[in-house]
View (cartoon, helix red, strand yellow):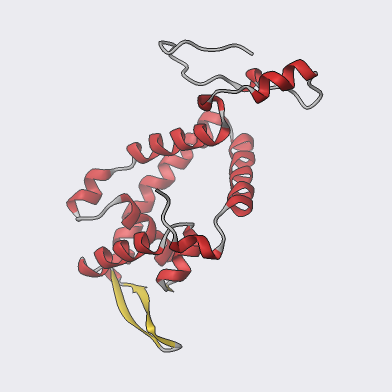
Length: 184
């Protein structure tokens, strides 16, 4: 397994650096000695940061919203109404993060808050016309980014990657009790 020096333009090893399914014990030993930058979880984290930086934050800042706020708005757009707890479960985020995002969306007129008729201690949030309009503008940029990714890797690999990420999220996503305990 090759190691890249820190000055390399391709900071992360490619798939040829990983052992095959019929790998010898030497190759498996090398696999077990992977460095952090070679872990799939690390690579996903780096890629997430890269894509977060590519998000059009100028538009969000101008509207007083964060990237998390925009993601919550997207889920609210799809669900039409939601509770903090429901969104926390769906988005695999902690309730305080969702609460802060909902407060920002309500404060800026992108969402409305009302009491949950089934549980008066809880609130139900709905998207407003202003929220729908902003989401429609925002999604155009997101579609363009997805198209560029699909063109770069090819549609078949894009679909395979998307399915693999869905499986990983569903399998490793936090359980119900995890949404109340922030990660340090």
